[in-house]
Length: 450
Image (cartoon, rainbow, N blue to C red; front, side):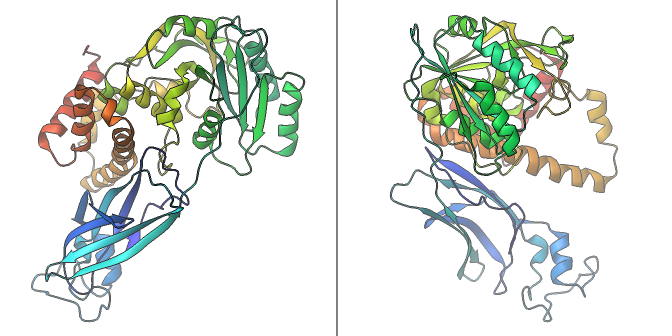
């Protein structure tokens, strides 16, 4: 067997999590009839097995012509695959890990039932279970009026000019009951020293440096985990934006009973030149449909204010086996639990530059219907390669996120939201579910209302 997506080196479970497992396997003793992932003794069927893998067949049988196998019943020269089962060896699935007390390791294995009735098993990995950073005790500013807002900022090698401007815009907030927790992603010592100097003498700021490079996804997770337990709300902040003085006040005033609120933003260049008066120049802003939000996130982290107890479900983040985004996960958790609100005016300036993790232009790209239809005229081999990339980078990533969301929030979702998530999780095995997704994509493409 061989795994093509590495397992996480460690696992934070929280209210439940899921690990994507993908690769190929063969059993020398016979053809595999059923395949399961085994998590601490609990067998879970894989999503797919027996999938075509021409590369595996060629690797296990270098002397066999894959296109001249008619009449061949085996390859006695192959110790690993004498029965020529390598072609139908691909598999993938999600290993669901439920909350577990008193354990420090999660054991994951692969179990196969063969045609003859025999069962064989192989260990995939022993994943250390870890607990993420704990909330930080911070004294609220005096006098403190209104609920405490924890501003969680993630930094890495910040431009001190842009960071200084952002810090000043936070200090200038008309709403005064806030603290700012800064998680630095192992910047160089001189950069971290400059960051510390920029907030020195202001007790409202707490700066913590990660001991290792995490990447922006897990660095935001670390920053959010630092939010004080007694905070009423949490706001996320990038290191190089500029908040308008009423950003916190406006979002607090309009959040109402929603789990999360986010605002529009002006798009500006580093020198302050306005590129766009709105973030939503081309894309549709849909924050009410859980299925639409799952497949096309519209909530920007830096624009958001959320209830502190939302983090009880959102943390720890799902494993970063794909290109995950913190704001997408936070938004999905919020909508699964309740409602998302939108403030339809810009209350901060989003600084667009080449170093941004996901720029405004990229976030607003929409493939035209003509281009989509043109893809059908590509070489068939190219279409297969694109299908594999799309499936394992896009679909499997969202399957993992939806699975974790269902585990943590399923009992509090409305029946309609549970159906939406369950329909998505069945999309690769149900024609009806796939058709529903296609129809949703078509609506998003042409901008039709729900």
